[in-house]
Image (cartoon, rainbow, N blue to C red; front, side, top):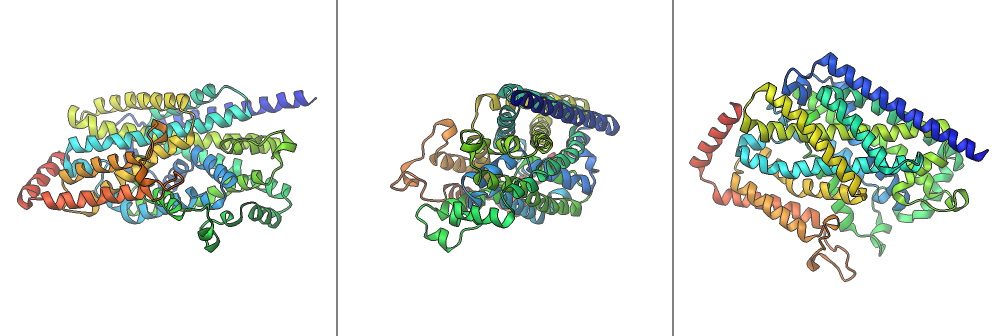
Length: 510
């Protein structure tokens, strides 16, 4: 009887997943035909700047609330406490600051990608150089998202890890190829509804099973102590096992490192006006906070569950969200929850692949091969396919979501954020300063170690216990920022720089 019920549930999961993927693909295909994204590269990349505010808010929120976001939030609240569940408020602050200080300025210039201000200021060569960390960030983020989905599907459906990744990647790449940003944005709206519905329905069941919210919260506080709060208090600061510098380092990485992403500016630049660009970023910050609540509660409920009595073992932290969906909620909610995870992954993977393709075609290929719409569109479709395949191959070979996420986030925070800040707000910045900052930031960050590449941290970063003693990422970012400023000021030649800037701006417009 139990085996029959298990087979029935597995069949329901598979049918639900097939229906979700079919709806997603057909919606993307329908929008691609309706909007005819094959007309121009600008339509492909930024939807011809006609994305409505409502759709823009949904696609921005859905892009940030990806598989890594909801899996990671549940994992952190289960394994480390709310104190270390920093992604929800970190990314919300990132979207808020991006809207206030970057979105409107970028949209006013009618840029097509995040790299356009670099190309305008420094020329195509330096812009192409800065494309490298941007590409690495997008590709590794895509791989991390697919990895999270693979874990979820293999846990709930008990299907091979590779099958889940290959199927999801193939669907996302297909409709992105067909319709560009319009297909991505339209499917994001549907996917966000799946996420909210699927995870939201799990919350009442979990709270009820825990004996109500008051009982659940009290038990969680007892389990984690000072770490049950979102921000450190005096008890946390006195604790021997809490590092304020590490907490701040990761928090600042999320806040400022969440801004310089091509996928973020693709949505900003697709808005109908500069003010709309600002508004959609700010409103998406609210969406990110709201959609973090279900996975946080899922992690809290999992912490209070006697897993040994339920299934005979305690799941790993990375597997906690699929485990909760499989064992702690009603069957219908479980099926919808799986669709929510798949939706979260699809809403981020398609956006990331399109963003990386757009930056390559517009800022690397176009300056070399010219402005032919036919060539740009052909190159964009080919690049979407190649980048999608690279991200899929990484997801199949590197199983650590944690390592993938931090590898790409560190590069974006340390290298790209200071570069973007300076090119927009520091008029005296020049090519030498930009290159100096790029080299120093990359080398300094390497000294902090990269576990993914097997690079250890140098001793001057470590305390007597072998842990990081300083906010290494933030120090590297500030060093990059200062080097850009100092080298630019030291090497500036007013007449020469002004003439060069005029030539580059003229070339960019042409």
